[in-house]
Structure formats: structure tokens, C-alpha cells
Length: 362
Image (tube, rainbow, N blue to C red; front, side, top):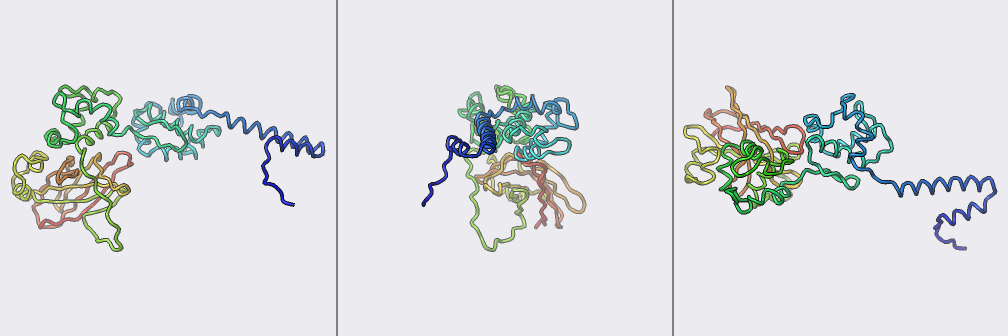
């Protein structure tokens, strides 16, 4: 005889219990009651928000800094941890790290509640993350596009009050002559008709930097992903390090002076083409190796050195040939090998990316 599929619910399980001998029936009924109570409790469980978890679980260490825990409100301590990202911080909290036990010593705290607590403490310590609404939801800083659309665009869309318009690189380049850091500092403190932090006090320095880069580079086409190749050519001026593709470009200053008329962006960038012998324009282009999108929010320093010494400079954000990159002028007069070392710091990427290239002047 064919049997039907097993579809027992609570009523059918009760029927099974009624058909058992009294001792077994009592035990079965007891276990059934526990199972049903557990199911009801889980169905009614409310995932608590970050502040509630912090107040009841995390505060005992993170308010006082007990056992080396980063104190809530200590921006320096939390900045280093925030750079690791929510996924890694959550993994540490769930498994335990150093003096902190797994789940913060409270096994009843769920994974999503751990995430929310971390985000809350980061935000109380200078961060601007969004608290997750579901398990595994990544915390994100407000994007440059969101900030520009909601705040900066009020003036920079139309050029109100003399503000450089979004995407008009000719208006931005003169302001970037002294470097991106100088322009960021000006935006932080306020300049002309623009109030400090663009009138949005909770904007972080990094968000301001990203918004400036976004307005400067708006409309620039992104580099497409390269076609796959079975035997790619070796390019000595291209390296991939820590998820970042680093491209080196070098052009003699004489060539720029000869081909770019006065007043063009290339002729005025970095304060103008230096006069004298042996100057070269060193350019670093950055591309995210996964998305193949230009990286325009990095800090880049370059050291050019030979056996006798060298010089180190910060590279300026620049626009040339319809793309965005970083550059500055260096002097290389001797005809022997130079080592060009680029130190790159990307938002959201811990540590410093270092790329070294060998170069010999022609």
C-alpha cells in the first residue's frame, strides 16, 4: 500500500502521542511542548538595534577601555579598526579576539546584532556607516555621489556664488594647483561663500575629499576591462598590488612644453612646466583590479631615487587625455637607473600599497 508524504503538524503529532503507551506519551508530549515553545520564541524574537546591544553588552569594556578595548568616542582607535571593514570586525567579534570572548561574552547576541553594535560604536567614534537592516548587510560610508547630489550640488550644479561647476575640469584645475590636500582643507574650514564642510557639519574629511574628486572627475569615461589573453605581454610599468592596478607614465617636460600651448590644462598643472634641463612628468594611474574602475580618491606619494639620492613628492590629482590620474614633476639628469617608488593609500584599504619601478632616462 502506498503511503502519503509525511506532513505532520502539531495536531498530527498530538495524535501520535495519544497512540503511545502512557510513559512514552508523557515524554513525547513534554518534548513537543518544548519544541513548540522554542518555535514560538524564535518567531517572536526581535533583533535589537546597535545602541541597545552596546548599552547592555559592549559598554562594560568599550566605555572604559577595559582590557585594551577601544573606547567609544576614541576616533583614532576606531579609525584603524574601521579601515578593516565590517566583515572582518564582525568576524573578530563573533569568534573572539585577544581579551574579548566570542560574541562579546554574550552567546545570545545574534550575528546581525553584533554587526549593528559595531556600526553604532564606529559611528559614535567619528564614522558614518549605515546600520545593517539584515544579516550580512555591509556598512557603507555615504557615497560621493550621494553627498554631491544632496548637498554640494546646490551650488556646484549651477556655479552659484562662483562655485566651480560639477565636471567642468577647467574650473577645478586652478583650484587644484596647490594640491588636493590644500583644496580639501579649504573645504573643511570654509572659503568665500562656502561654509565649513559645505554646510553639513557631520561630513568627514574623507567624504569631503571624495566629493571634490567626484565633482572634478564627473563625466570622465571609465577604463573598460581588458580583453582576456592567453599570453599577456609583460609590461614593466604596470603592476597589480592589493587589488589595485598601478600604471607608471613618464614624459619629458620639454615634450609637454613643446606640444601643449600656454593655458591648456597640461601646461598649467602642478604650477606649470618647470624650466631647466632634466625634468620629467611622472604620472601614476590607478584602476581597481576587480571592477576596472578608475581610482580617483587615493593619496599618492612618489620617490624618485638613484645611487646618489632622490626626492619625494605628493602627486596632484590631474585631468589629461580625458582621464583622471596623479602626477608631478621630478628631475632626473643622470643617464643611469632610477628607482621610482609609489606609495598609495586607498580609502577602505588597510595599510599602504607600494609599487616599485625601474626606469632609465633616455
